Length: 307
Image 1 (cartoon, rainbow, N blue to C red):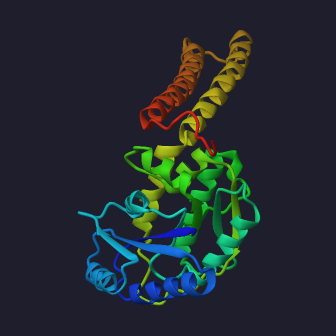
Image 2 (tube, rainbow, N blue to C red):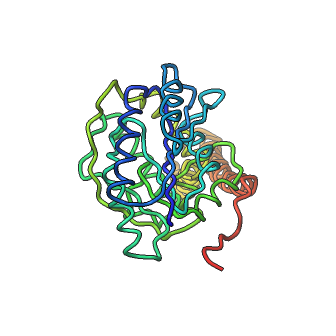
């Protein structure tokens, strides 16, 4: 019998956990009709989330609970849940009920309709996040498009269904700052979007602050893309070309007597030339550094889908 593992990173969500558990149980018992396990990973919440998780676990042996020693972040909490998953398929869903569990069957049906699909990602029909969270999503998607051309027509969200082999590979990639979307794209391009509903937040406010937006942006840029270094390289290249053009212009002016200050032409031309070369060199060196960083991540050269 097919089994599903539903992995939920939890942070300050004691008010939503009981309803989340009940709705997940109803979906897999009454709609999907499959075996399942609900894996709740507390990312060192400051409220009573873990106590509520333990209470739910005491009532339902299909619920597994784990508490991280400190706040490691959503992606690290997911990595913990992935390591404990035993299902044939793994679902990731947020703890705030904005991802309705009742939408999970849509992901399952879409993947069942095409056996070649490895990952089905929910694409919201209408986002109910706040403006900061929406901005963050756009930034992350833009960076993902720069990192991997296959994502150009994809929305990357945290509501996903993955085949177990993808999750197993993710778990085995040892990386200091894992970004689940990036790792998925590194493993497979058999990814589709499935339109799902997105609910309003029932309790509290989003933990996605401007500070977190800046932090996530920095992590995405520093970990997964050489875009800033490419910009530096391009600016340097343009500066080099501009310096050559100006060199010719100033030499003509010097020859025609338009420039009377001795040495001014030489200084300006050399400054433009060497500043351009320096910027371009930094960009080139940066690309080599990113390749070294890529090697340090020890991401395998290939991933076997079937054998």
